[in-house]
Image (cartoon, rainbow, N blue to C red; front, side, top):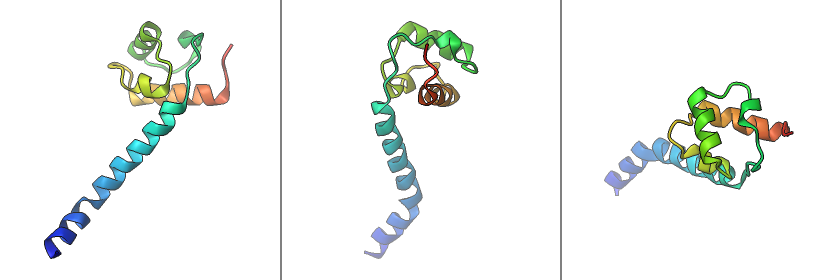
Length: 88
């Protein structure tokens, strides 16, 4: 029992971080990306991220997060853009 408590304490921070990631992913899964979004109009996206998003056209932020070449900063910029409703 003491060993089990030590293990739980040792990994508690890691487990909390992973649970937080899961919650963020669930929220991202629900955030839809309109099919007609113009990625060229979004300032701040990295060139590679913009190209991949245009090519693949993900329907949610969660899908976008799984695209190689789309970095966390690109996702944050896209999320803010969608939240602000800057769609044409």
